[in-house]
Length: 312
Ligand code: 8YV
Image (cartoon, rainbow, N blue to C red; front, side):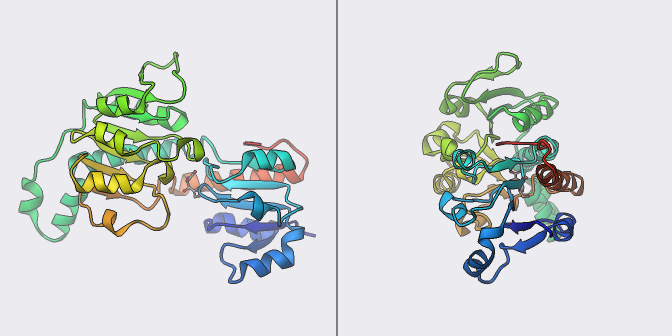
């Protein structure tokens, strides 16, 4: 008998297909009547597959008494109630490392697109407007100051790349990391005041909610651009929209938003914001490696083996 598994988010076909073949996969994400699906099958479900932004509140998980493992197709698990999972003995896995380089590449692309006006120039030339595109001068990226909020695996990969652009690198996090060659700022406001690019690469969740607020944006000021490849929840989006609209900061490059896939109309209308639909890890190579980890963690768990990339 295949193991009943609940899919709570969209996944690529190369993950969906093996899940369908190897498990009794119930597509909760696309179910027309989600409550009916839980009523009918909730008591039997032994595994859940979600993505980085998936949220599984305790009250919802209470309806799934047989769940043993949640396998997240993403590095971030900020929507997962880790203490509750520990309490119930539910295992949790994610997909670290395999996506680090792609997400860092995306951060660098946003830095370049935001500073060099590449998106606008591309749009103008597609409209056959060579002159306007060619005559607009933008801001140099090389040699500027990059302030990284969250110097974890992805933050360090971004720092390595930007060092090749001769940028001065500094960072903010909960603790200084004496072994890294970059300056530590204990205050995110101080880091913003120093930086030309404030790059958010810290995990989401309650601990970082609206870490980037009005005060931080004012400190970043007209010299600065905000880049976010981490989680929308870390930035107070309403404050960011006001800062971009009123010229408090220079610009923004965003791959993540507070309420995905919703992007506020005010943000869509702003020319000084480069916006991407959460594609930081979206390459064939990386999403395939992530899928293998999701499947590998599930298989290991049900074979009684240690998880490949455990969180809990
Ligand atoms: C994915 C992410 O977009 O890893 C994460 O935390 O947010 C992204 O890599 C997401 O998990 C969808 O698969």
